[in-house]
Image 1 (cartoon, rainbow, N blue to C red):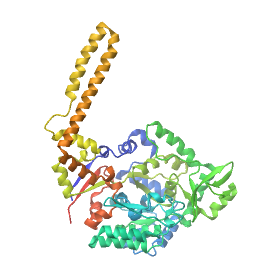
Image 2 (cartoon, rainbow, N blue to C red):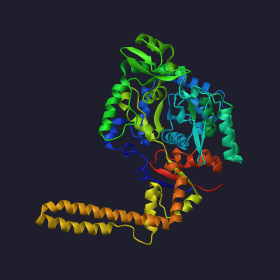
Image 3 (cartoon, helix red, strand yellow):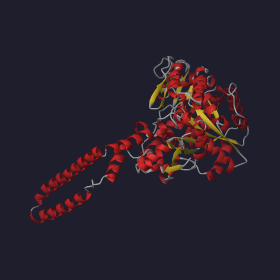
Image 4 (cartoon, rainbow, N blue to C red):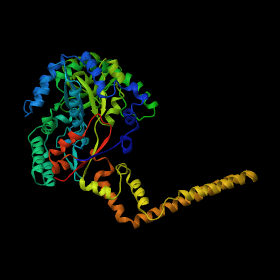
Length: 538
């Protein structure tokens, strides 16, 4: 499978903050611990080994073995779970929402980046073990973000009859109502060996499991168990109890808000957009019916938009007896992850890394080792036929990533048999007007305004003529323009990156497990390039 690539800046899809982080810009150095280079992991392993509370490993192992008790797992996954009991075992983590049928393609890229990094670490540091972990966002409550996936340009949406949808943790939601989605998906995906696998995967996950957590774990395990992926749902009381001290600090001392507020101001002052603004208390209260913010007023604690309230002593007692009811939000979840896991590196998308960069000073205040932050791999998948079309249309890879109107305008200018660029005429006009400016200054300076107005008018006229000529050429070259637009629309659905829109099943149906195997072979987590991968028709 041939591979091309493009730099992240050339794609025009990544923020200045992430691009500057990737280039290790010195202004950002204070917002992270170590940059994720293979040679930097040695010191990080030593630091994490010293700072991590290894007594947590027993509970971690017990919880994982319980969660996997009803799943068929590979020897590699089983060994990875058991290895977590050893002080020489460390994790690499990626996290993701419980999107219906995995959601967009980058679900695969996140996990594959994580698995591949553990392989590279094992080669470099053979005396240690490295476990790839998928952290399921089971406590998220934003149902509308996860209840659909896109296939063949169609949206498959789950209208859950569970009245708690959108109110409480999505991981607890019943899978009821997914029978209808399964019927529509089965009709769309068609027949054949790969299609049958996909239908079976969907059916076993959602129609044979009672809740979204178990269904998502089943899918991720089926796709990646042979690669040793370990999947964790971290809401278990046995894990949450190890976070009690930090939750108490959040409730009483509000450390995260104090620490991250100054960091946010610094990042803002450097001209970057802030991903997440911290709250005074970054916790939710969680039960079967709701996940709502905890707020504090005049020494009392309340659950937002409910009648639930506590005194300081009462809420600390509630925390001690039921730590599982205290759910970290996006600003606190990273700390929870790093407290309970012997983790070295977090792999995420640009948006995730942006909010992680707000947290380093908070971690330092809580004396928890801040993980390395690695941008997940990104890729564009194209068929041999699409590649041939692109080459026939003489579109370079970098041009493919342009906005569509920019791409079409550029190609029309290139293939036209007349010159649509009026820059020489504009330069000539500017030269002529400069002579008139000189003349006005020598005679009557009040004439300068009239000269400027006329210059602007005539330059605007040339702009309009250029646009009209370009529009006329687009009509003349209509077939070529349509082919360019069609190709780009295929590769960039909804004018967005393919990986943020298209479900993996669209490609799995054509290529089967070779899709995952090829991605495993081609995606290097430490290589900072956007890959373009070409698949031949099976």
